[in-house]
Image (tube, rainbow, N blue to C red):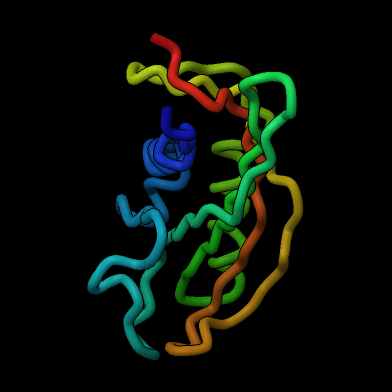
Length: 141
């Protein structure tokens, strides 16, 4: 049995949120930016990158808490903050849901904001936070 990873479901919820979609035009990625996302100064565009930081499993139940780093890039610091707010709204305090493939999520929360920063390679403004996702460790059949 493989440990279930809820990152794909969270990514889909963020990408499909109308407020986020209006800001990033579908550019929500898992792991790292796609080719053409991270451009140089004067060509910055909005996009979001999610990456799993780790998980904690309960000792006596098939439940885990997964931490996901959320990085929201935009053309300006203010736009990155607005994008981070929209992404947070898309997943914060969402209750129970089960995906068609059987991933069960009990809840997702914007756990802690990490503030404004700039990408070290491109200098692009970004705003980051950590999301916490409670999920089953196995698929529901």
